[in-house]
Length: 218
Image 1 (tube, rainbow, N blue to C red):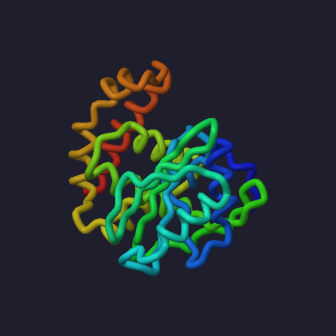
Image 2: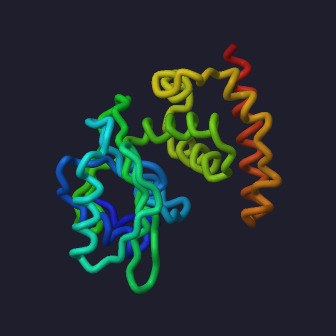
């Protein structure tokens, strides 16, 4: 798949170009992957996952060195055996770069993508949707609902994602997810993040329709 990078900014594309070909190979997930596929919103994060490992080992050191050698400024914000967050900056902007050991099986193989000439591997759309459903169990962030609506509108199967979510999160069930959505205050979150009224109403309608769908499948 060829891509101009969607809604990724210049620094994000540069980081992916620098890290293209890194071994062991990572999978780009989260908002960065969605920015490439859908370009429906921007993100300040890049999330790199290694499905072959429960610990990152020497990967963060090697990643950091590559970025520094390329002229970028790198500082460590969080550091644990399975998760590291870097702040990566150039002269104009900065992003968060998350490195994650993630030995959970994918539902579908990731996709090979050329982003502005850089060859990377990105999480599949079905896996991205499942991840978003699971994320909403543990946090209340409007971006997760925005991404879920965008993925479903793009044709990714919501029914398949609901059926597959318990494989990634044992606490997921349609009823639990419906309860979470009932307490998801779209109006307040949209006002706090200055989401336009039309989008706010559409998202809340999507939330209500999703609750009805989940409860109808009991």
